[in-house]
Length: 311
Image (cartoon, rainbow, N blue to C red; front, side, top):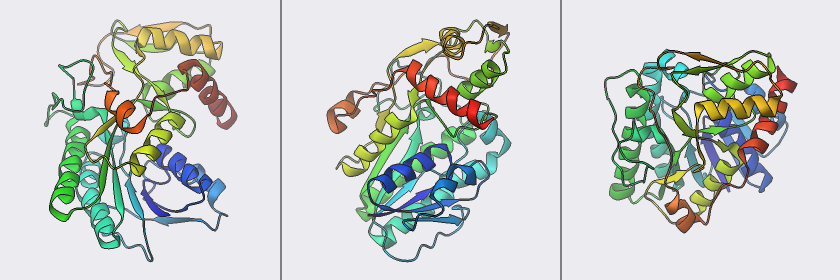
């Protein structure tokens, strides 16, 4: 196949490109590099099967030649990033998704949308099934990301129903691994950065907020299976091992050998932070025969080793 990956120089997009190349496919990566980085893809620059195009997909997308699949992963994804770039975040969710869908239509290609667990907002259902409509504040600071992704899902399904386009939607839950930016503001790089500097890990509130963390290789496997499937409704991809921020900080300290402990601060890390987040992955198991296989401690060991090597 020849696949186009928007956001192809980003954390997840670059890992996805690696997987397609490893499977013998050709990859065209598009990225405007506001949050992506050429260092994530420099190892592929000499590969004749790989092409990089510096482009903002909120503008019209033109790719020469045949395309078999379009995977839309372009968007700021960490809260500090989308709070810094609120309008580009909304534009890439709306205009960028429209342009990526247009490319898929023009090429007769299959389309995969990277959506997010943020679709569910601060959930009133726990765990979150794909049938749950969510509890989202459209005018809160996080709304620029949440509503961009909700719109992206709506237009993707409109193209599926109106144009008959083959579409897939993945709702990605907290994912971590090599190639995250140490300064991107998400909890995993925040904790790891503090741990490798020998600092106490900052936990907000009482540390009872919960998350589920999946290693990037597990996510990529799920994405690969979803693209190859015949399933068009959204699919949650994430781990169901739910832990508190306090427990997570303790695990990071243990795996990294950091003895500085935990520093508790009052309040929320970012306004609107959900208190709980855990996917119901029944659909992924039934439709894709997918489950995560990399344990949190092993994934953290790999990620900490990466950050120690590169920082």
